[in-house]
Amino acid sequence: MNLLNKYVWKHLWSIYTLSSRQVFELVKPPDTPILIPVLFVCIASTLILWVLMPILYSIIGVTSMDDSIIPAELVEFSLTSILKLVIWVPTTVLALFVALVLLGTYFFIIGRRFRIDISWKHWLGFAAWINIPMVLTLFGTSLLSVWGHTPNPSPIVFVSLIVMFIILPLVWAVVLCVQGLRIWTEREMSFCVWISLLPYFVYAILTTLDIIYLAVQA
Image (cartoon, rainbow, N blue to C red; front, side, top):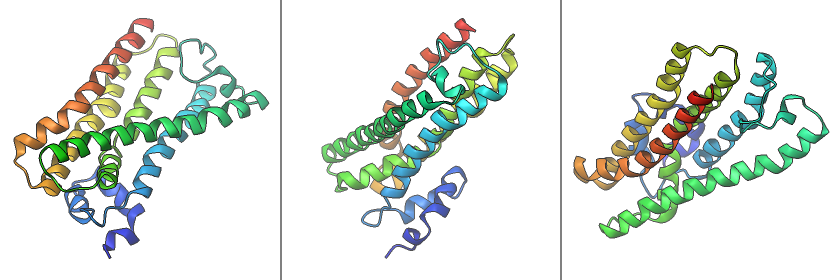
């Protein structure tokens, strides 16, 4: 029995530190914890989006919600907002889970192509582990949405949010992916780098377009 399985929640936070290499060594198949990291990514992201952000909107006093992903009804909490949460919370969890499934399937296909004998479920767990920092990216994107609704938004705050909550978590996720692939597959660095960069490059392009749109609207 992998000792990590007894303390999975504790080691989730190690992903954010320089101890991440040790985590990937501990979670190598067949003892890869899957359920808890998957639930952490899906549920933590959902709580940020549908609970934390409406509270933040109400504190700041944002009322113009037309171009925000946060429905206005959630700021003025009522029966209508409860009904919206009943719909959107499970939908968001499902969407995030599908994203992890797609990424895990991407690694599985690459693994099969290069005769790496790791099962799909373990690649799903791998996708969850490397995306733990991306929870901060969702938080940053939401904060940028708040920034866009404030009067006279500061460019310094805009750049700071992008660096702290968008760029750094994204770079760290890529580093984790490369690090984890090297430990799991024992392949050369170049192989791990190009496999890691492709999905996050696509994500970076989509996020950049959203940030540009937000900046123009502000």
